[in-house]
Image 1 (cartoon, rainbow, N blue to C red):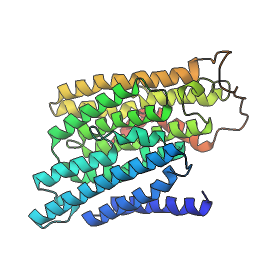
Image 2: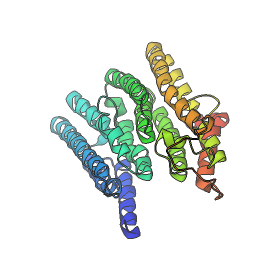
Image 3: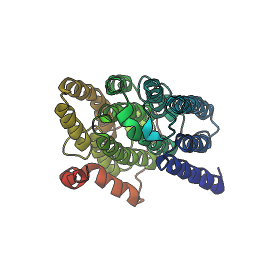
Image 4: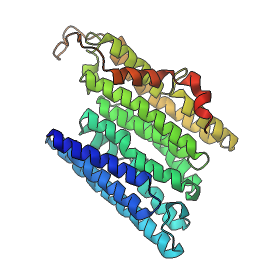
Length: 346
């Protein structure tokens, strides 16, 4: 792909995201989502591999369906109330359809089926965009419409997402699929709290995006996409592998890392809302995800490759680690002590 084409698609992604997050009208929000979808498709399919083409097709069909549902819910609400404003969504059927549309856009269970397949067929940099930037516009719409949505339905979907994200990631050997199920699991944590404390959902999304960006960029630097090649990276980049261990533990939500902060606050808020059983359930289900994060961390740092490995031996890289990864790794692991500063606006 030529640099000019990459520039056009990246600019379109930024434009589509900006239009959606800054709009008050359903039509402009929908137009921004469509621009986003059309801009990411060439980036998914740029390798021309059959798996990449399949991923682009699946992504297009799913996002087109979700966009149609979103537009349908907006039109139904406008028909009954005369309002096209995003925050004035009051019709119950329109709210239900919108919940389904946004769940499909985000990859929230039970509409998660497309996400692991699409991520597996995409390059690592595009997979990073799909996991973070592409989820920002629908997350913004979820934030804006959260007072109108059904909290019970969102709680059930959230618990289902955390359960499926944990269960289905256990037996995976492809790192992109593991990170896709990790994303589905994290979305459960965001969805469960959005009706009660929407700002916590955004904080969780920002910190999740930060930590996921670190993991994807590290994997892109060491050119690793499956567990068997991850085992051979310790000899290649020991320092980067050690930092990947800490970042994965942060993504799992273990204290004293950054990833513990949103989980801690969400459990606290759910308990205040007399939802201790839901908080207990989602906390226990996140232990499933912890297993495959520890598996990744174990393969990256503790396992030494056997002498009879089928993979080509990795030579030690003398190039310095990119400064972006160094900054992201630091923030991904060390923001917990300054949590009072983060919590002041919330």
